[in-house]
Length: 479
Image (cartoon, rainbow, N blue to C red; front, side, top):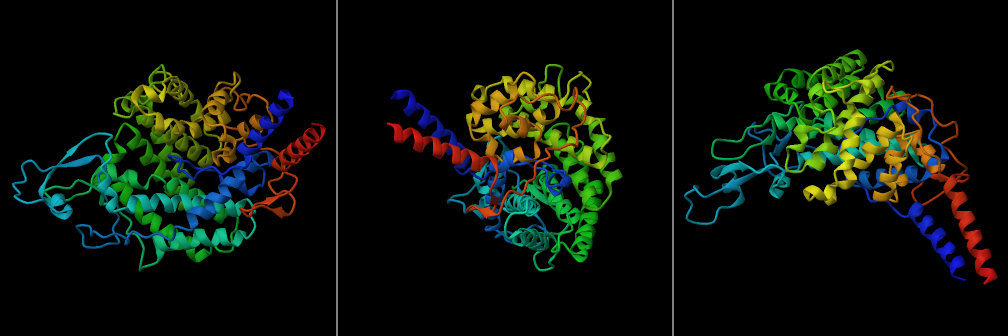
């Protein structure tokens, strides 16, 4: 009975897509409204994404804690508490070094002239991995805070993780980072090692840290004490002073491409950490009334990103930063209309996404970067809608497991409509700010639990499993 076997195979394939693990990855950037999680309105239709987020929280936590002092090299200041990284696209040219024997890595760093090869990552920069450690740290606090808010079993462990990691990275005098990026993305060579404006980008994920802090603060986490909150506010105020006044930071702010966009992500997020919502709004307004106006052409192209050696990556990268700025704006001021904001050429964030989707990643030899666009697609669909199903079709074709991606948790109502089998509609009403209404179903199913510790019971996945197994048994019994 080929048709029966085909049915069973199809059901088994569907089941495997929803239950197999999704590899942990880092989205370029994001910010989530803590109320989205704290109101428990995720809905059982996001079970797969909830399961993935909880699993990622555990995987990331196992790597921590992190500290800037964990590096073999020392910054020119002589203080390992200073964040340090090397410029990623600069390579040594030792043709004029005058050496008669092979140079050690340390000799290369100070003897050879370094030249820029845009988009070509020099792997030895990770010998000093403060930037990679900060990325892991930000991801860890982000997902552990989300896991805590989702009422995952043993939730106290997740809130404790967030506090432990933030304390180690920013507050403990033995391990804390000094609030500056004076030695980030240093350019090596015989003229000395100095930080560069591009190094400000190394802390772009501060918006994820802000998301975690706001979730615990607004959720009244027992672990997030007044002492921790006050000390982190003080640290953040000092770092804000550096971001707003240091020459390197001001130069980065004036960058017209993704570097500038991410600068505003970071500064606005810090303003929210220090309870300055008006300040965060002012920062984002400056972005949308400033460099944003020239970032998207009428057809949706991002010319400054397209000019790079990896245009597919950089289009998606800047899109993520633009979306993050929009979300920060809405949180700081719910009446904000930045999703409506057009560039001088009349384009919106959606225009930029629509164009990016028309350019195959293979055109520029970037097949491995295609997934970078997926979180942006879900974000845009949740705001502008997807009446023609184009965005949903793109996701389904590129990543059959996309509904198990954590980004589906905070990109609703797109997630709810997609998993119901209905095409997402324009819930944002013609490019307006996203609605604050969410699904009315509860995030907390019945009390049994799976291997990740996330409670499972009456959720949609359990229904899928039960129905699939029952049908398979009945069909096989009739053969």
